[in-house]
Image (cartoon, one colour):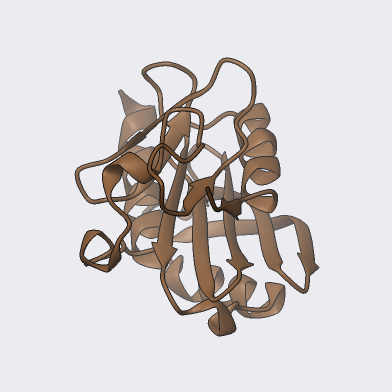
Length: 179
């Protein structure tokens, strides 16, 4: 149980860094446009998130796309329509993670950026009241620009180092397909 107490703040951090896509349905991104394999199911353009073998996906009640091994989502993707120009640099992303995680010890493990994405892999541990740190956990925070849209990626609490690696690959390869 102690592990859960330390992971819960990480979820709050992930959700504060990557808030949900309010109103995406109203802008034409209905739940059917994201299928379990990330492919488009409607005649409109759809989002394709390449998933590792064995992973499944669903659209969560808050309209975020979540994927991971069956029954255990580890990757959250939020769509920001028309905000592609706001792609943060990897340095800005790292600054934001540090700013929003004052109650965590954060170590930057890997930074990766290109013209269309910024990906940041970190190890986080909650700072304890006695001056120590709690259980360490890996995490991904990322952003990918596809056309005019911005996709925000974050791993969810409980992700293993391998889950974070696979989520990083999936975020890097997000694309939009037209039918």
